[in-house]
Length: 326
Image (cartoon, rainbow, N blue to C red; front, top):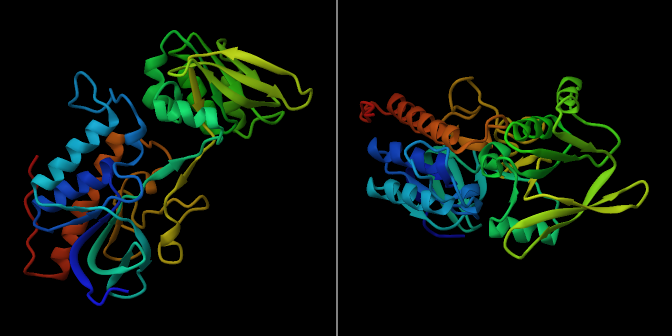
C-alpha cells in the first residue's frame, strides 16, 4: 500500500462520453477533477469506426477520434486524466475511499461513476476478428444500423432488446434474419408478435452461430447450425448484430451502492444522478439499461457534475456553485 493518501475534491471513475462530459463541467466549476480512464480508455466508442448520430459532427467521426477530442477538451479546462483503474472502493463512512490498481489510496469529497456497461458477445474468434476490424459486427443496431441500409443482416438474440433491435433494422435493411437458440423467444409476447408479423424478418429457431464469415476485411455471411437436426447452412449477410445483453461494469460497488437484479446502479432520486450514498453520483451506461447512447451518456455526465457541485456547496459554504454556461 502507498504511504501517501491523496485527497481529491472530485474523482471520476471511467472515461467515455459520460466521464469526459462530467470532467468538462466539473473542471469549469473549479472542482479540480481527477479522472481515471479504466481498462478501456474512451469506453465502448473506441470500438466504433463511425459515429454519425452525435450532434456537432456533420460529416461523422470515428469513435476513437471523438474520444480523443473529448479528452483534450476536458484537459483544456484542467482535468487531471490518468491511466489506471479503480480496483476497490469503501463508501461505508463519511470519507469516500478508492484504491487505484490495488495500491494507491485516494480519499474523495465526491465520486462520479462512469464505468459503463460491456456488451456481451458470443465469443467466437471470427466474431471478435470482424468486431475489431470494424467490418460488420456490432452490438448496437441503433448506432450502426444506418450503415446497412438496403442490405441483408443477421441478428442473434431472443429477448425484448433483440426483438426491438430486429424491428429497428427491418425498417432500414432489405432482410433481417433472426437467430434464436431455443424453440421460443424469451421476449414478451407483444415484442415477439411484432417481429413475427414483420414481413422482412425471418426467424430461425433452434439455430446457433458457428462462424462469422468474411473476406478478411468485412463480413460476407454467417454459418449457422440447427441444434436439433445438426444441419449446417450459410446465410449471406453484410452485417452481424449481437443482442444478447450487456453487463454493467459495477462489480466493485456491490455492498455499497444499490444495484438492480442485473447490476445496473439504481438512481436514489429519479431524474438525478444521485446514488444511495451521499456524495457518490452515477452517469452513463452504468445506470442506463434503456437508451445506451453516447448522447444520453454525455447528458447524464453533465447531470452528475452539476449534482456533485451542488453537493459540495451544501457541505462547504466557501464553495460557490458556478452559474451554468451553455
